[in-house]
Structure formats: C-alpha cells, structure tokens
Length: 354
Image (cartoon, rainbow, N blue to C red; front, side, top):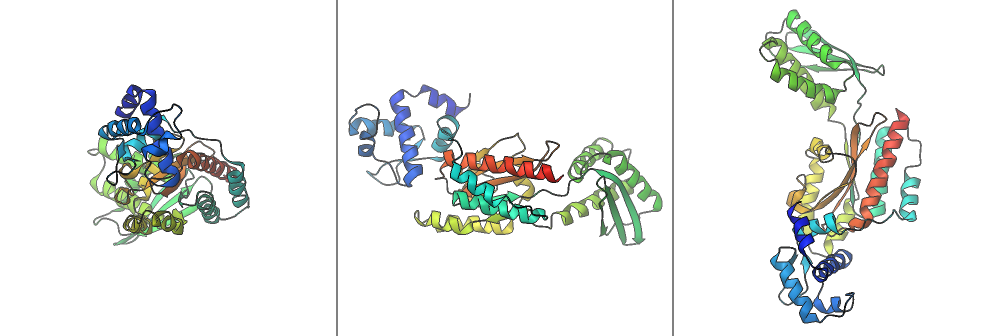
C-alpha cells in the first residue's frame, strides 16, 4: 500500500468528504473552495468552523494548500494524485464525445500521417486542451540486412522487410572496414533480425553486444552500432509526435495568469523532445495513465498534467500513443474515457490496415 492509499484509508468519512468536495470544486471552477461553500453541500450538517478545522488537518497532511490568507483551499499535487488514485469516478464516455471522435476519424485516409493528424484534431476538439499523438513507425518484421561498401568513407545499410518494402541509408562507416568485417556484421544482424522489427532488433543488438563483446570482431561491432544508429536517427526525422490544440492551452491558462508555464510547455512541444520517452510512459501496460505536474518527466517544468494511453497493432504490440495535456486542473473523470476510447479506436484502425 502506497502512502496516499494509507492516508486515504485512515481518514474518517467527514475528512474524506471535505477533501473530495474541495478537489471536485477546484477541478470544476479553478478557484479555491471555502468552508462556507462546503456547508451548503456536505451530506451532514456541520459548521463552517468544523470544516475549517478539517481543512487545516488536510493541509497539515500536505493534501490541500491555501493560496491566500483567509481564502479557501486548493489541492496540492500530492492531493490530486491521491484523489485520482482513490476517489476519482471515471464516467462513461458521453455520446456527444463519442460521435465527435467517430465522425472525425471516420474517413478512409490512405496516408497514416493524415489519419494521425485527424486523431489529434478530434482529441483537442473534444477535450478543449492540447493533444499529443505519437504515430507508428514502419514496424514490419525484418527479413534481411546487408552492408554495401560504396567508397572508403561511404557505406550503405539495406533493410528488406517481410512486407516487401526495401529501405536503405548511406552512412560513414568506422575507419578500417574490410569486406570480411562487413560480412561478419551482416551475419550477426541477420542471426538476430529474423521476425524482429527495427526497434526490437536494436534492443536485441544492445543485449547481444553486452554479453558477447569479446566474441564479436571490433570492426564488425563498430559497423553494426554505427549502421543501426544512423538508421534510427534518420528514421525519427519524420514527424511522429503530432501536437494539436495549442491555442486551447492559452485559453485554459489565461484565467490562472500562468502564461510562463504555458510558454515553457510550448517550448517543449515545439522541440518535440524525447519522442521515445513519450512512448515509454505507456510501456508498463495497457490502459490510460495519468501524470500530474512534476510526475510528468517530459513536461515537468511546465507543471502540466498528461493523460495518455498506448494503442496496439494487430499483433498486440504497442506501436504508438495518444494523450491530452493541459493544466493540472483537468476534468480527469471526463478526459480519461475520451483518451481511452480514442486509443482503442486508433488501434483497431491500425490493425485493419495491416
């Protein structure tokens, strides 16, 4: 049992209700919630003084904060996390939201990039926040790998995929390469490549080189590492992380006068940094994950919240992710089912195309 769950379990019914109503009120309005407001909504009749005492206890526990003297309370990041983990009621997807997403994604786009752009627009339109969509790479299994020497300082790495597609990259090989080292490098890769995608092959290469470093010729090892590195670097040059709805963040942040946070977030989004890490956020399993404030390692400086879910291909492999990003004052109960439904829909569409 984590610390948040332990605290929640030890709270009495009154404290739990005060905490829940403060958080729900803040998520709805963005304003601090005061004791007099709660006297009108509590399930039992209690005085404002009693509620203030409960609020003070919750503040001492680090769950609530008082932004101004004699003002109401707002939840801290720890409080929001405890609410999301233990008290959040995720409602069913609204029929209006479902229809909006279905209508936006209903086209038969031949280009995967167009489809993913429509996904992003659907998410940002439905939630009124910014959306992040990580499009899938071409991840068909590899059938064959070959190195071809073009000149002393130029070589070609060729990948033949099981679906018949052939791709190649020109790169500068490590000095001293020989036909023998190139054959050894290709043999090493082909022994590992059978049935693996580029991503899976790179992971297998890292493991094998670590465990068999002494068995593999130094020239061949350097060639393998540089050849696959150039493939990965150039393969990421296409726009995989699609961002839509930035203007929604300005509107959401204007009320809190938190434009510096929004600018920091915009800078991160413009750089599209750590694309691989965005997908790693979802690697621990299926389903929606919620990252609040500094828990979100990609955008921690901006103090934003991220609701993200992976989607899978026909082989049940995670190939991308969809998410919504905005201030910590998100309506999590509504946004979670929207993200979840969109991820499942995208997964089905990707599977149908394969």
